[in-house]
Length: 188
Image (cartoon, rainbow, N blue to C red; front, side):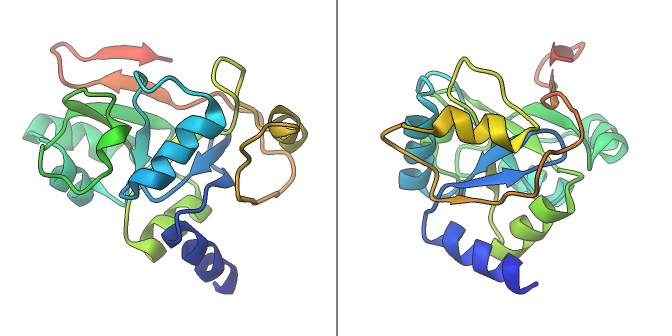
């Protein structure tokens, strides 16, 4: 728990952290911190036109940030926690950094099945970004060596790396758009 507290303190300071997730290594920051979110875009060299999804604690938090109807809620109860990001219509008054959304009126949300990610979300009591730890356009990875290699020599670097070795082989989370009917799978 001491390590979780130390990592959470760094997140609250706006630090960008390479963190193992239930899929790939990811870049996580406090999703309410505009400067930290900007830094993720810069480190990844990600176009500002591409939104970044967020890890949240639970469905209650999803309902605070986005419009969730009864059918959507029942679906989320079946798939979360898990390796699925859902796209929902976001509430305009949510307290997340506006630069996450790329000007769109939707938000990508995920409740991870990673114990570490969930502990961090609970400890800082704020959503965290969920984006793979890679340079935009290059593949995300479960292998720490690949992650470190992508950032080697880059002007901007993550502030902290949580190295737990190689993760089990996995693909990025699936993405489904629940703002349309029938829902559309955007990434399997």
